[in-house]
Image 1 (cartoon, helix red, strand yellow):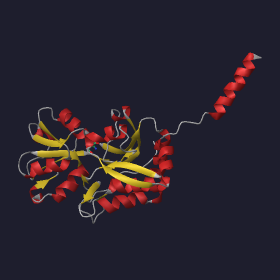
Image 2: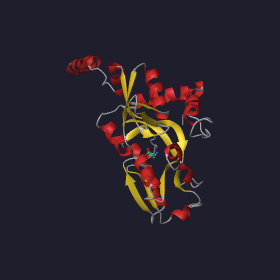
Image 3: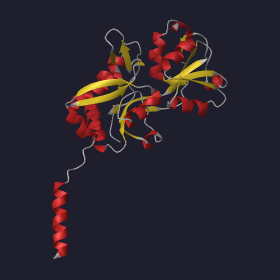
Amino acid sequence: MKFKHLLAACLCLSLFVPALADDLDAIKKKGLLVVGVKDSTPPFGVRDVKTNTIAGYDVDFALAIAKHMGVKVVVKAVESAERIPALQRHDVDMVIATMTKNAEREKQVDFSEGYFVTGQKFVVRKGKVNNIEDLTKATIGTATGSTSEKQLRRELPNANVVLFEDYAPAMAALSKGELDAVSTDEPILAGLLNKMPNKQNFEIPDVSISIEIYGVAVRKGETRLVKEVNDTLIGMEQSGEAAKIFNRWFGENTATPLLRTFKIKAH
Ligand code: GLU
């Protein structure tokens, strides 16, 4: 008898304890998605100084994901080393900021399927570098907290790696002759090289040291939010919207023409 009462009490309790709200519920409830993006990494995220707004490939994905969720979107600038801390401090709900998904980062955050694929290369003075051996003892700038930094130390252990908060100041140092190279993902280098005042003196040789697959990062354990993002990304691939965004920023007539060698798909 006693056991029956206890069982009934437990059943009642389970009926009345609401499921804990997750990030997806919280975003929908406030009607707002806050996304961390880059603001000086053309063409993924660049601030327009006149309007003080940020636009780019990553921002377009943020807009599409918010639209799919039926909420408004606000973008906030985050530098490479700040992406995971910004998520953990709840400064942002999501990061779409040229962020490579890898096993090490997956210990701290969860990632969507990949939405961009590229590789790490170098910007150097024209005619100076033909292969990786030419960079063995070079002074190379990159951003702190990036996969680029880690890979440089692994692939070129005798190089002098100089860390910057972001890639734009590293390019300024290269332009002034303070560095032999700047290294990160190829489209970031192409976007910044295009803005360099003395760009005719520099090039990106065909020397690649990694494959980088960018993912949308969310807080660890937010499986419903990851599914929502993945559903949007796969839908964007199927509808052609993802390719359209790619062409807007990397198409033939842009400053950074690239071939779309990947498709967004479920793994
Ligand atoms: N994709 C690399 C990373 O996630 C390099 C680019 C960046 O720092 O944003 O670290």
